[in-house]
Amino acid sequence: MTGHEVRAEVELECVTMEIGGWSFSPIGLGDSSVVFSLGVANDIRFDKGVIERFSCQVHAFDPTPRWVEWIRTQETPPQFHFHPFAIAGNDGTLRMFPRIPKKGKRSSSMLTLVDEGAGSDIAIEAPVRRVPTIMTELGTDRIDILKMDIEAAEYEVIDDLLDSGVLAYQILVEFHHRFKSVPTEKTKSVIKKLRAAGYRIFHISEKYREFSFIHEPTFRKHLP
Image 1 (cartoon, rainbow, N blue to C red):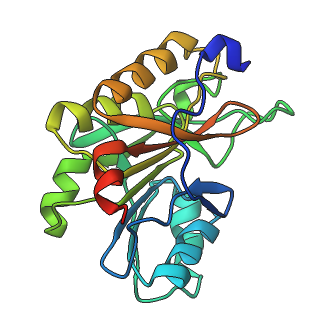
Image 2 (image 1 turned 60 degrees about the vertical axis):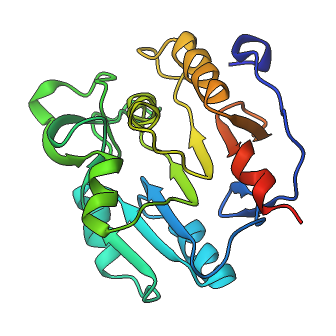
């Protein structure tokens, strides 16, 4: 996937920092900030790093049984809160498929909403929640950083957020248009929707998969 095919570019310059491979802006963040980390697997460097830097609350989500068990073995700070379910555009359960590794093995620990060749016989039913539902359950009316690496579920999650009027201050997302079943047009479309809602791109990874968006009106309010 090339930048020309996605037709996206950095639209706003701001101070940034990187933790665990994710780029975000520290402007406006502090110990009262709320971070949602969707899809963590066995890598919580971002989550622990943000807590160390800002002493903020981080809610992490992942339904994969292997990673649920792995998280339980880790030493995590009190500000880290793990929830063993997936995030999607509905509440309930979803059928999810193990991802096929590049070397051709039949199963993988990662779960995705799209069947890339694993086969329905090894699909699992995973509990899922909408982000607005989680916010109500946690009693929070804000998200300062919403980080997503959720294997092609990001499109429906972003649609649901915008339809619900939930405007996270920053959205860090890995788009999965590299999947055969995910057309480039889906990424183009969701970027257009985010722009219309006031978001601007301030970082794009070299592979054009990880994008960092900031809600410009909120960003301007944080400037001196």
